[in-house]
Length: 198
Image 1 (cartoon, helix red, strand yellow):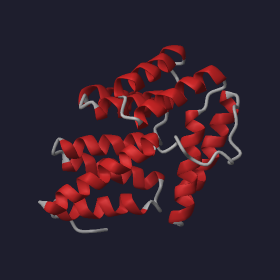
Image 2 (tube, helix red, strand yellow):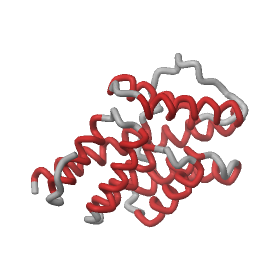
Image 3 (cartoon, one colour):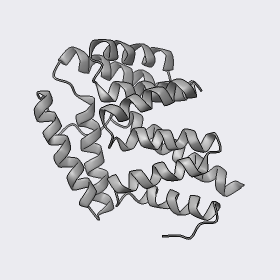
Image 4 (cartoon, one colour):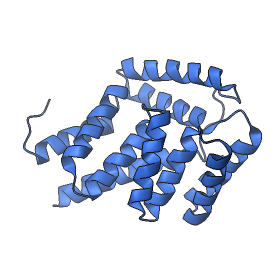
């Protein structure tokens, strides 16, 4: 029981870190306001490298770049709203965070990270159905979004749906195979469910 609580807590904190970790992150990376086509090309390149990387440190750096890029749009006003939402989320002002991210979604329904961040805000409010709804919207826009997938796995674990959570973690592992935390969760859940480790 203690192991299960520990693992669930670890998953939870990874979910929150991925969700709000861009607030105080290094801004020296070569990521700027770019047209959507250029942004998509850059994301594809980063995800391709992430998929083939066998270096946990490089994986963390690539994930950080991806999360920063997903935050940005080609409009400064939208980015300002996103920054305010992230700040509210980090300060645990979840209602304000929902408000800011909703404004972004209304302005740009294709803003992947606005859906993901609003899902996190709902999650923190205990509104799991709303969180799942926004996570699914996120994944429609970006199926490789490891943060959204991690959040979905966290919810499944809280709901006692270990098999569903395992499938999600295995999906993340195909996106970021060198992510050590994900591999640990896969092995833990396989052990918990009486499955052979792979």
